[in-house]
Image 1 (cartoon, helix red, strand yellow):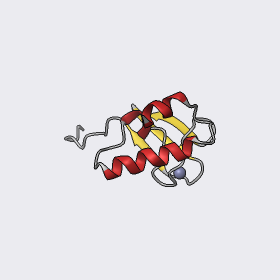
Image 2 (image 1 turned 180 degrees about the horizontal axis):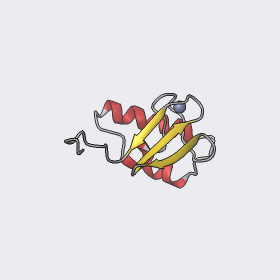
Image 3 (image 1 turned 45 degrees about the vertical axis):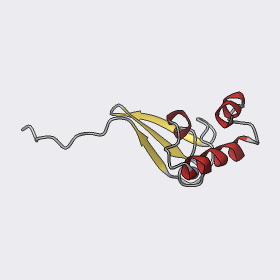
Image 4 (image 1 turned 135 degrees about the horizontal axis):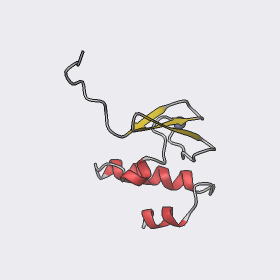
Length: 89
Ligand SMILES: [Zn+2]
């Protein structure tokens, strides 16, 4: 299946953007979210692959994983959101 084909390939493979685009379109057609491991690897702005060190810069800040796409500049944040709790003075 598509996911096995994606796992068999490295992200540097020239066919990977095509497979990621297929995955995105299949998930949209089936009205299901993109599986979490692949959501981290594709850009929602330019639909490209996000390879750390090549097309993406990943920083951990306040327990959040902040991935910046170096192609289009879109920022993806994964992790716990800071709760707007009561202010403690
Ligand atoms: Zn992008």
